[in-house]
Image (cartoon, rainbow, N blue to C red; front, side, top):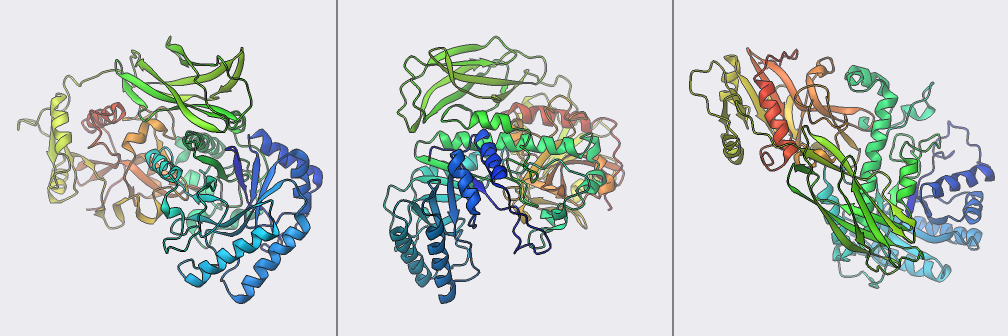
Length: 628
């Protein structure tokens, strides 16, 4: 399994959806599906908790795609479900044993239908694995495709599932992969009864990001379906929500928003795939998923089997050989030394003697070459580093670092889209507005020192209104606003501004965006984002200032006063990350970006807060009135 495996769920099932008409796909149709998979750079399809049609397996045999399939899950482990599960496995093997495409079979997924805290059920799972191995000696047998707080007991793979919002929390993803690559004990039963062999291939077997599909008229039949009554998963009404929350001021139409979310999906997948393939120990990965499935829109194809906008780029990325630029820091001020580590994942039989790594920073004269050291086939390695001085720019600028490996005049691997860097001119406000601070919890101490060092003066008493930067919405702030003051509230913890209007941490109610994907957006043509709004959907320029909290309770009719926000999935849970409002006679800016700890160290944070203070001191005119 050389790093390019994929996850497939069934789009239609007549038993599960009795009101639909199921027409078995033709063999030609399934061959075309397999060709689409290979065009995306995939070499395996995982048929999730499903036994596929024999024609599906025939098409995989013909086109050359490997298959991982599974026993359909049950609700609870009982003597009856035990016997039916193993009888199903025997039937699968009896029908499909001679398909060369099948290489893996799973017994259970994410411990569904079992309680692995119970010793008897762990014992059954170990026994089921041992039975399966005697039935299919040529296949790999997966005991439990694990996630969360469940684990393996005995199996041929050491896989795990993990979803992380990217670019919000890239360090979290990297830590998980580095930990799994070390073959940690948490992969296996904590009760001392696991039987690991120590050489099971390590895999991340579920991960991914949403990218909404373009819509068709009329809406598809599945638009009214959600997942277990969870409103956040309901597609129906998405176009109304697009208009209700004023997204037409950000995108010309819904399909333009959908395209942007798909490119966002690609950037997330690219980062995660490169993180995985930089570790030799990780020998496979499974993207969730090959196609969108009803409400769940993390497919590489949509429900109509059309490739999403990034199809060509992903296909070029997912090759046997992959050269990668890994950069912890993306934002630099002119004159700083920028750094990227270069990794090479090598699974082909291409001759690489004398190969070189060529790099260039688009839009600049910066370029160079490195010799590619020997990397054994079937492994990954750090092969060098690129350093350059951040170029001189007159305004915040994005440039892509492009890299490729060339051997004998042939391009062996090339990054199709590059790694984005963001460069900022050095700038210190000469005559900034006076700034006061209100910080009862002591959270802004660093910020106070850094802003004073950058020419921000305390009010002398002669100013009618200075800008007050506060960390708590308390009586002092309310009194300042009542007198007509201007307040920037930097809030990352739970705070109530009025009934139904509150700042809450993103760890609340799945607002982190790890499961149902989140999309951070900015009004890039409005202050304070005019100079730093590189895209409407924010990318890696914001990773240092990822909002730790959100503001919820802004009415849809007042969303013009949301200068930056987040939506989830099908434009649900619309919240603010930078919102302007009237409060009494005063004007309030509620900001949940993580600026207090990053100002003056991260140039994006510095530009944003400087622009925010200038904006707070201007004649801005919110319409939204927060009730007192």
